[in-house]
Image (cartoon, rainbow, N blue to C red):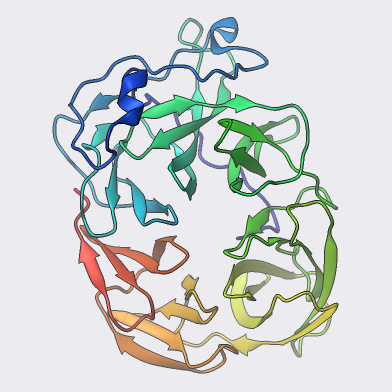
Length: 374
């Protein structure tokens, strides 16, 4: 998560999947759906300003007449269902064993991936006014269910802490200064509602790990603060970190952060050049000294991820991964494998890396399975 300068996500137009009537929602999600597209129903909870009031078109999508492209990015639910984004505005929902739950759907442009949760996926789209192409559009948060159908969501103006079952995701929101920026929002599946949660500082991006902890990546610097909450943003605490580097204290460091297995990893860029990395426990301690390990030619800093236990892995020039030997992630062993590029998604139990036509899965960086999502 690069938080030093939160650039806006790509602005993409979107035709969205249509839904069947209310009766469809109770069918077996693993049954192959009929290849038709009809209007999607509105949830009972209404928006503060409806799409009709704003003149914004209703979500629409069609079944793709043919499948093109390779897997690009992937969202995973805790149960192993996958939303796979393909090229040229196409996507599909399937299980990690390869069972296809929806046909390949075609969108006119695409959407920004959000988060997977029990029952579906949250994504962000850019919706324009069909009656006035010059008018300012709006960012819309949508739900894609396990059969690939799209549902609208409502927005709550009230800031509130998280409950059990809520999920967080990164979304593009309008900004008066930059036009748009990234922000971390929350989604409540039981109400199909998007809302903001209280945070101790502004202009930070927040992540939620598999334990339910919320945490922030620092806005750069060799010294700083990691904010965290383990009670759904009801109370916040801080861990002061210090990077062990011979360059001395400097704001010229920017950081790319990951968290898993109760640990946080910081990939350090000095003057925007990949320089060194560190890993340490994210366990509530007040201070954290992180010795830095320099990048070398074996480790691709732009193809990094964490195993579920918190160990770092890096892509390489060849097929395979450099896998950390222990939780400190300072020494690595090369394990041959089918991939060399980088992660296209992650679940709480597996790495998900894409190479060519296939998605590859591993729990330890050594053994792999693969499926073709098309």
